[in-house]
Image (cartoon, rainbow, N blue to C red; front, side):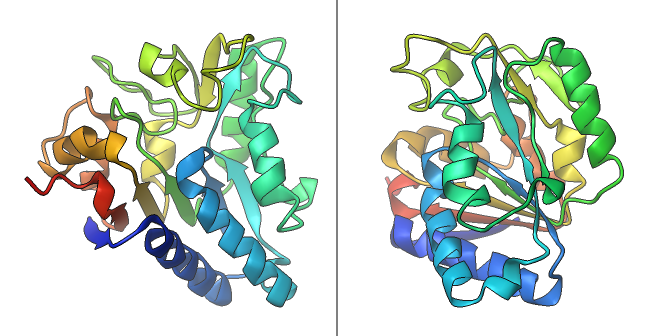
Amino acid sequence: MIIDICDSYEEMSRKATDIVVENLRQHRDLMLCAATGGTPTRMYELLADEYTDNPDLFSGLNVIKLDEWGGIPMNHVGTCESYMQEYVIYPLTVSSKRYISFQSDPDNPKEECLRVQSLLNNRVIDICILGIGINGHIAFNEPADFLHTGCHVAELSEKSLQHPMVSAEEEKPKYGLTLGMRDILNSRLIILLINGIRKKEITKALLSEKITTQLPASFLWLHPNVICLIDKDAVDTA
């Protein structure tokens, strides 16, 4: 894992953007696995700026949504889908044929996971964008005695339910739908973004290089091609 401590959130976001753009120049039809939430937002905004200047660069881009809050309507303001449409799909003009997405309110959540898994099994994720939860989760792979390999229905931890996307909403998600650890670790390149003072404790735990299912992000140390961009606010300098 390459660790790069950035002076600011803006610098972290620009470095991530540069990596994605450079890979797109070499591989126009790459598959991008996109996380949602506050951490990657500026990176997506910068990619949208790049699209304005060079739309052809994104003409073959494929996107898969990393995870989704389950049990709430797809058009709910708090879904990952609403975020994806606002920051990724619409700004980068990604057609439905080039977009794999969990439904947030499927009749059968397990079958929905099997559907997404079947689509993913025929593809390779070229770049996986990840954040880290304050409890160490990546996607909705929550701390547990064991982790799941593939797409699955996740029981959400109390810390995950405190996420800003849903914490203030009256209608709370009942579960999560998520890619599994194998799906993530099969990616050719992983970009892990960490920012904010609230992430200091979990960043310190991650940087200890101790691998445990109680800190799912620690398994990224086993991957041969991870770039971890951290803004200085998330680093314990004491």
